[in-house]
Amino acid sequence: MYEYAEGFLTYLKEQKNMAENTVEAYSRDVSEFSKYLAEKSGAGLKEASDTDLVAYLFNLKNSGKSAATINRKTASLRTFYNYLMELSHVGANPTVNIKSPKVARKEPEYLTIEDVDKLLAAPGSTAKGVRDKALLEILYATGIRASEIIAANLDDVNLRMGFITCTGEFGKARIIPMGKPARAAMEEYLFEARPKLMKPGKGETPALFVNYMGERITRQGLWKLLKEYAKQVGMESKITPQTLRNSFAVHMIQNGADLKSLQELLGHEDISATQVYLSATKNRIKDVYDRAHPRA
Image (tube, rainbow, N blue to C red; front, side):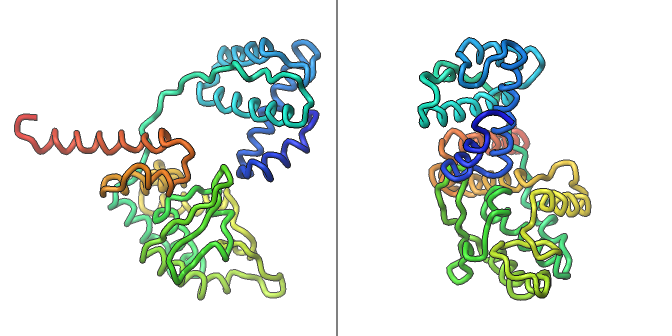
């Protein structure tokens, strides 16, 4: 465990409102840098210079790490040293002049509307099936992140008005409409299936989605059920929680949503993150043109 680890974890969770998996990744990145410094020169994190950091990043690149991975590790270290600066534990931030490598944006993978319909029709009528139907409907209807739906509580849902409130990675709460099918699926889950999943005498949990133990569903549980239904409908290789989020965004743009509104719905800090979905739409339009126009 590196110095200031406990305080840094608290800082990420409470002040930065980061998701648990992001907190773990940032902490792991700092720990790896600490180990590198110790092996290279015996220096500690407080003594690291910008030269040490550049050498470390070059070492990562030479070992075959991708630009995306190096960017993430750079962001982790930048956040850590900002934290130390706030505490006045270091006199200078070694990450200030470090530029992150450019990452080629990949076109987002998404499902067709027909494939989404197949997936959403897969769950059965058992308590688990009703829960899974509501979960899948909400993911596609709102485009919220896997971490956000796992962290969602009962009081985040307003069935009467038809929306869900969630707090994203940067601590900014946003309200997202659910749509009629998702709302209906959620009503059936909350009033019929969820009580059956709760264990007698265990006490009530605020968690919106629960597992067979009556406890908050985990990230692993979400992935498992998604893979289960993807396999059932013959799409096992191309579905993740992010795929449903991408599908929500692409289908919104295809049906006329403006980028600014979509940015707010997705909880993106920077609109450039939202613009990536335009490429998928443009490519689709080009495919349609190539197939349909006699002189394409």
